[in-house]
Length: 516
Image (tube, rainbow, N blue to C red; front, side):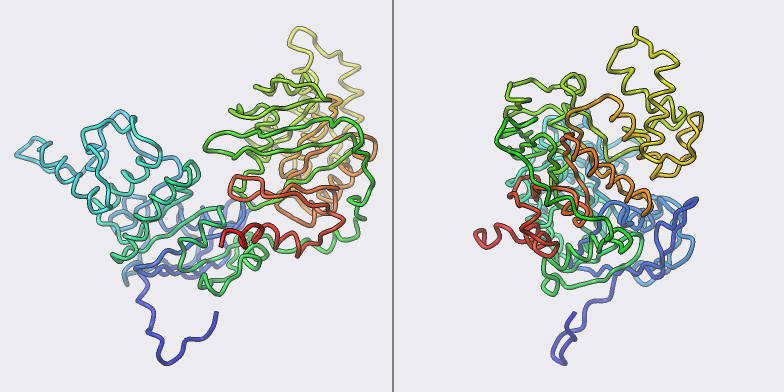
């Protein structure tokens, strides 16, 4: 940041000062001495990829988590929040991505819930709705307070949640991914409200993975990575490319020895294994194209929230597209469920290996054969000899450690769990495998093993769609890279014709020159 001149007015006294915040979970240092300040009359964005510590820091501020070390000062007083109620009493309110309201109640009832004016021992509903309407009017909204909340759009529900926060006289408003389900017009409506609250002196902590929106609405940005503070910046002092670099960091030197496979020639004269045209889902992904040929690795690059995962979930049928067409080997197909994808020899390894991947209470062997058993159906049990052979093959091929098929999978390291998941899907003999963040949160050795296996399998003809937040990894493995931003496909590049800095710049700035 540039130094202040003598004529520059001093910044206002922070309403929140968090100093040296450290939070530990079993085996994990979630936050390591993080400092954070929030001033009245500003929009302050908190940026970082998954695992950076954003949610943990917010939960420390709102009383969900207790800090192990460090201090929290609100409005000049040191606070120890033991609950969210403590934080709310200090003027800190949060509006989450999933609106935490009662859809079966009216707009007015939701705004005033728990703070209804009374006449004697009864609620004065006329006064309650009048007061709710006043709060909405202060946000520039004219909404019938007696209408059912469920009848309104997500955007209106977000505004109702903000109105409720104002009933609590919030000095700090935390907006956690408030625009994730909104279209562009709804985002503009929300931003108008945010700017008005900022101008009235409310301190707003804004969390979003949408780069364009962060630069549109923010005054300052704090960047976290791997539980540590990278820095705090005025938005004008942090170009987009630098922000992306600070968020994702640089690839570890230990992986640089892995030779690039991205220059391997791919024959694209024939029919793609998969071709998607204008595949999209309203509110989740603008219509996008993607093709992948035999033996090709197609990378998908972009910041978290850019639409990477949304696109591949539509291709796999985990979510249902409402536009576009998918061809497999040149034949139009309906992929409306994972069952349809598996039948067409398409496999998918989710980024959330705990919730959608590994079954921690089963053994390594049971996890590996699960895919084959699902493919065959419950009535065609896998014989013991075949199971033992398949399990032994993939434990050896992927270097699962310890090499014990009877080990409970939940007791393995993250890297070895990921290898077991990869083995599960490879055992089904797919023609296309979609790998969403297969190396996230695992050690360097396991990461290199998985990268080498992807390169080896694609060289033998397996088609791969590969998503990773680590852009060097994408450039190393993929022959082509589809680039996503703000839930839309913004372009495609050949990895042999672009370097890391060029890809970062493409993600951050492609199309901005025409939009300006």
